[in-house]
Amino acid sequence: MIRHLAVLLIILFLSPVYGASENHAVARVRKGDNIETLLKRYLLTPHICNIEAFADINNLRDKDFIMAGRIYKLPLLIVDFNGKNIRTSTGIKDYDLAKKIEKLNIDLLEKGIRDKTYKENGKLWVPIAEYECETDGTSNSNATIESVKNDNSSKLTSEYSAETALSVKTGTELKRTGVKEIKVPLMGKGYDIVNIEDYSLAGNVYYIISGHGGPDPGAICTECPSRMCEDEYSYDVSLRLARDLMQHGATVHMIVQDEDDGIRDEQFLKCDNDEKLMGESIIPLNQKKRLNDRVVTINRLYKKYKKEGVKIQKAIEIHVDSRSSETRQDVFFYYNKNHKGSKKLAEDTQEVFAAKYDEHQKDRGYKGIVEDRGIYMVRNVLPDMLFVELANIRNASDQKRLIINTNRQALANWLFEGIRK
Image (cartoon, rainbow, N blue to C red; front, top):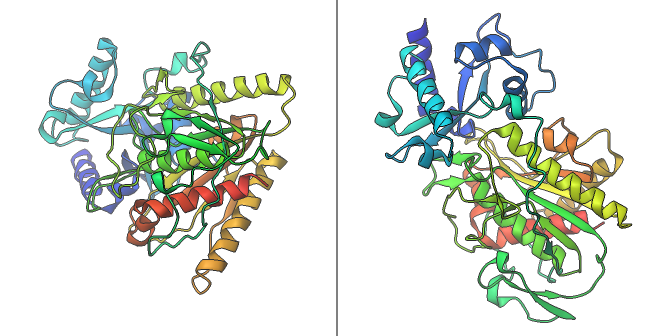
């Protein structure tokens, strides 16, 4: 039975399910399984950290129920082995932790769950919550906070098509006009000079969170013409949105920052793992700690600004989904059902997207949903929170929404119109 499971798992990794797993190991639930027994079968401790990580990556509402026969992602991240050592492959500096990861991979091989060593197939299985449970309650409260002070969004043509490129101006084509000009190196060459057109959003604070980053690339399309990583495309759209907000005088905090990758106009964005929290702190591999660091950072800033009298604070987290390659997916939104401001933010933004689709692709229609979801970031940050899924990274039509730079700009423009309401 164990050997049969190993064969099944390898087949899953070589099939489209692998791409849909967002770079996590996956497993099919057996009759009678619960989360605890499933974790144990893959040599993971069924403690609260692994259970919560499992629930988060599978977007589960009920931690006590999983369906027999269904495939679920495991809190085991699949990381490319660089041929040197585990620490440089994962960004982990702790030697003892690296040895634990090595032992887990050896044990998985001996159990028949893996059929090759990580050195043979170049893939490490790295647990995201196994070893740090005892420290999950702590956070990096001393993390350096680097605030990116915004200017505002240029009046770009908000034309969007999933099929073709648009006449949206980018880079050095942007008109250099405004009441003030500021330099924001994080935006990258051609975008680093930001012109504040007005101060209509002055006094408002926005937290932009691009999904994943650092050791976790998020969803990956390996069958694309060139490898596509979720975190690179969500980061590019996030920067464009931040720039739009800055152009109208808002204060913007980019929670995830990559000093090497500003706004980019090429189709296929190079995957890397050097993003940092606020440009300063290493992003941990442990998912719960990674998300907790972001929540703590945002909430600390929120309280600071609230004490100063700031009335409007909003958080926007941007992701790219991964489903079967046949599934075409419109932009959709999650909100916190216990937060009226969060729901309004999602509904306002969806209305903008519906109107834009009606204007530019009237015959196509728009099916993007608004839904409450108990995602960790959505339920734990204090500002009004909007969680966005831009596209299905594995669908050929949706990919055009991501790889064409003017489409990425249009996505940012439309998000800007929605969240400024």
